[in-house]
Image 1 (tube, rainbow, N blue to C red):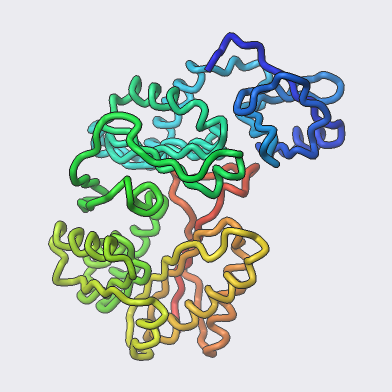
Image 2 (cartoon, rainbow, N blue to C red):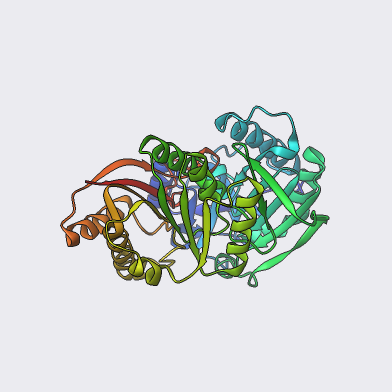
Length: 406
């Protein structure tokens, strides 16, 4: 990134500028732009000004995107360049480790989301770390154009074993980029990678696994599952959409004797069994390759102590939300039917389009259909390394509800 290049100025219409500066949402849409001038490079950094010429922010620019500007800083005078980004990422590491109460000095045992795009003032850049293996996602033109800078910064700060790219197709296409991009950008991945979390060892695959290899955002949901299963003396549990079985380990340690892990992925089921064996819980876990709705339907009514439902996103477009909510209703209704009285349901949604109110109504409809009285014991979101600013509600996507069937 050329820090000596004079920043270009984009002028925002008077009415929009007033609203933008008041609410400080980091996205400025194309309709708000009065004048972008000439010679502004897509993927570059611009200064943002109102019609009077007062500059009030700096952000990334892309003429091919409906989101024309993504704000990096509300300080128009701040000098943003390579060194600024290095210090920013360094500060984010300290903040995340403090929020997660990571006390180890062993860099190879630190696992968390280092950079969370706009939520961390780094538009379109996601970096997850698994010890000294870093997984990056370039979701915007700005993030993609500066890929060499991000790898260089990681090298300067941590000397990684490997940096792996897992950029998703859908968001990139909206930025005028080609589809999914994957590959090793630096170093070499270990033949079989193991991470440690809360005393457990787990195999992960950062190249082909879901998300970036592991669900870092569910850390405190896993802890909640363990606490509730222990306090309620759960003995028989089912884990649907179980992926590689991290929830299984927390339930087994809580004293659950029989855990049925249900998923349709051969890779996920094989890894779930390996993770159970790795931690000495293979006698507690039964891995089943089965359709979730089919297996739930075949489960005896009023027989299960606890059920986890962690489905993939049911909706990626707002206009399809009605169908998604009906899917949640069916799934949760079926699970509640299988729970004993006094049973626990841990039910999750990972779509930013599904509001808390939407999900609650869907859960109400699930319980109401059965005539069951269901209490809400706890509501969780992402863990602290995935925290989102109040000015950017789009950063919220995860909900985990803990329900109690009377």
